Amino acid sequence: MKRRSTTAVALTVAGSDSGGGAGIQADLKTFRAHGVFGTSAITCITAQNPARVSAVQPLQPRLVAEQMDRVFEAFPVGGAKTGMLYDAAIIEAVAHGFARRRFAKLVVDPVMVASSGALLLKKNAVTALTSKLFPLAAVVTPNLAEAEVLARRTIRTLDDLRLAARVLTGKYGVPFLVKGGHLSGANRAVDVLFDGKRVYEYRAAMVPRIKTHGTGCTFSAAIAANLALGHDLTGAIARAKRFVTMAIRDALKVGRHRALRI
Image (cartoon, rainbow, N blue to C red; front, top):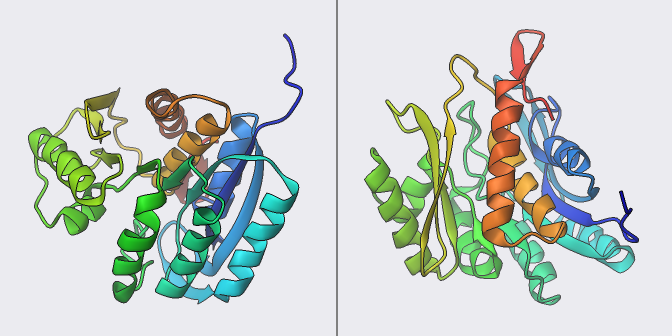
């Protein structure tokens, strides 16, 4: 096998998960699993495990921006993702960092609420997220609950999911991948992408009786890694979907919890 002359590089701008299953930790493991060199800019430190988040300490926006500056100064970043950004000031600093570089391969995971129910985005930060960061995205990847908030509509069926992807792409002017893994009664996990012209559907068998933490982080990181490897958006999502499905299916038993195998 011919080795690439330059290793692909990806960047994650997100929070630190002390439990290791989500956030920066999941992203860097996902990059490594794809053979991509992982870099990071940490936005928040959290005290959490798969069951709960007990504390969040955001970093100063200037420090988040400086982490990004040092990464871009030294590395040819080929793909990036954002995760937990927490407040408007951090969002604005991160958006400025990507905008002034005209960075095109950005995956925005609009992290709003943890699977444990903890609020991970301040309510007054939603406007900054949608107006400053969304326009820079190659794709935005909301889960079902986040899509309902952003689209201001209930999503109960696959047709609702398709409509939400169209509505959100039309509203914000960038492709949206709406993840349907939590649709009630579904026997397949279906995610719907609308790129402004065409609808794409990504399907996988539901993995029964496996409750994991960090699937959204892992999925968006896998998309970013595949963009860094040179795949186009639809191909990057297809590869990421296969990766996260296998990570759930082969989840590890760690103490009382299940962790994605990444």
